[in-house]
Amino acid sequence: MNITVESGEGQINNKIIVIGAGISGLTTAYLLNKLGYDITVIEKKKEPGGSIETVVEKGFLFDKGPNSALETHPLIGQIIEELDLNEQLVYASKEANKRYILKNNQLHALPLSPPAFFKTKLFSPAAKLRLLAEPFFGRSKDGYYQSISDFVTRRLGREFLDYAINPFVAGVYAGNPEELSVKSAFPKLYELEEKYGGLIIGTIRSIKERKKRAEKSKQSAKMLSFRDGMQILPNAIAKHLGNKVKFQCDVTSIKKNNGGFQINYMREGEPQVIDCDKIISTVPAFAASKLFAHFDEGLTKHLNEIYYPPVLVLYLAYKKSAVGQPLDGFGFLIPSKEKKSFLGAIWSSIIFPNRIINGETAEDKTVFTLFVGGARNPEIGSIDKEILIGKVRKEFEQIMKISDEPVFQTYKYWSKAIPQYNIGYIEHDRYFDEFEKKNPGIFLSGNYRGGISVGDCIKSSEALCQKLINNSQFIINNLGAK
Ligand SMILES: Cc1cc2nc3c(=O)[nH]c(=O)nc-3n(C[C@H](O)[C@H](O)[C@H](O)COP(=O)(O)OP(=O)(O)OC[C@H]3O[C@@H](n4cnc5c(N)ncnc54)[C@H](O)[C@@H]3O)c2cc1C
Image 1 (cartoon, protein in one colour):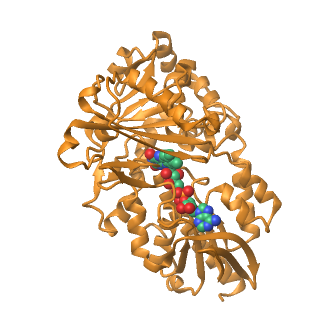
Image 2 (cartoon, helix red, strand yellow):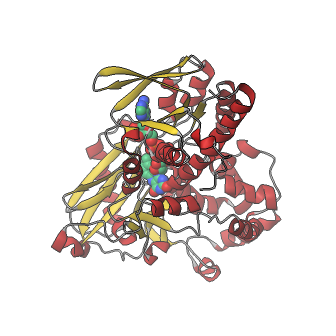
Image 3 (cartoon, helix red, strand yellow):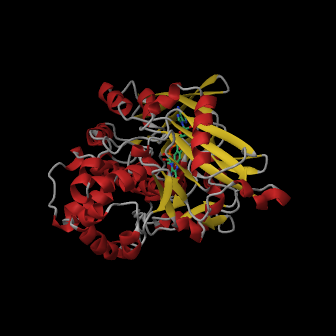
């Protein structure tokens, strides 16, 4: 853990409540607990994980939220080690390095080397030449108010936007490249231009600097999951914290109380109250807006303006013999120009071969996870799910040359899936910082701040702990410890 605590500070007798037992809340609680703080986690659902949810149905392992995490930060490996999860840890297979993009109903492998780039039919010769001209384009002054679409079109050309970045944005954010702010949603990409003047030169130079910080880029970081699915990680953190995590407690409101806070929540239909000195909220922005409604109208407005599009995650299992497309990759993403009713599919049992637990019949099955909706197709919210799934399946089976019905199918519908760091997001984030300064003891955290990936949430939790410790030191120095 990279946190600096001045001696004895961990013993501060402050009561800290963390709201939400997703990966952000649990990691924060885990780190603070380790530093000696008195923490309690309050969670609405009956199990830990939030968006990280794994089920096994009829022998098929279905990750309803994230299917994997990238080991971008040393803290991820450290937590896995400390919680004795090494036996559970699985890395993505070698085949998963190969990723496909759909163009004209054909799957094209994304080129991973310069010779493959010159050979690929994914981009026209003109688009390839345009890409090579990237170092000659200057910086833009638009900063946070530039979309990823404008940024990429300017630097790399329209075709690269349509057939590389557009599907990539759908894969990461289920987002719309015309709306996402490049500086807020892809800060590292933006930094390459801002700091080094261009993407190609910046990539080369930043590799050296990342090595110094012992961090890995999202491209080079290893992709991991767990033998029994992603929920193993939040489950293990919650188990480690024991009765410090309280489930089925739905926080309804928060009030200021004698220099601290009063948290009101419902447990089994009964209203409950708990007092504390500090609050770390890790619930989604739309949920936080209700909890802090008494504090500040502006905060409610900013939290509510963060857009969470719906996503339907469809899980399909087939006999291997029914699939005509060679299964030698991570899966494929679909550019919006291709006009399909889903965003892409990952070949789950190729990436992590333990996704089918069905004993003797496992060998002849293969499973896929498809993503539908997002900011590209938010209308899925009002479409009959069976009709939608029928349409998606038909398109998917054509692309994958599948000749038989699935042997198993299930889905999860997330009505508000992933926060979008759209243009204008920076105003929200600045307001959240101001709110925290005006209301010492309250910390707003979760995946709508500091990045949406599991790795980003873990990294942001460490940064939050450091902020809380600095803030405690400030209060001790200026007001005296309680
Ligand atoms: C479909 C999908 C696929 C994804 N795929 C990937 C992927 O492959 N890789 C990756 O890195 N990331 C992926 N992500 C993103 C990542 O999973 C999330 O950003 C991350 O898990 C969010 O964690 P969190 O703790 O910030 O929030 P959450 O997981 O949303 O946790 C918030 C918690 O707060 C609780 N809560 C809410 N309201 C209250 C209340 N009033 N009282 C008490 N508790 C409350 C909720 O029940 C929840 O448990 C995916 C997300 C989705 C939805």
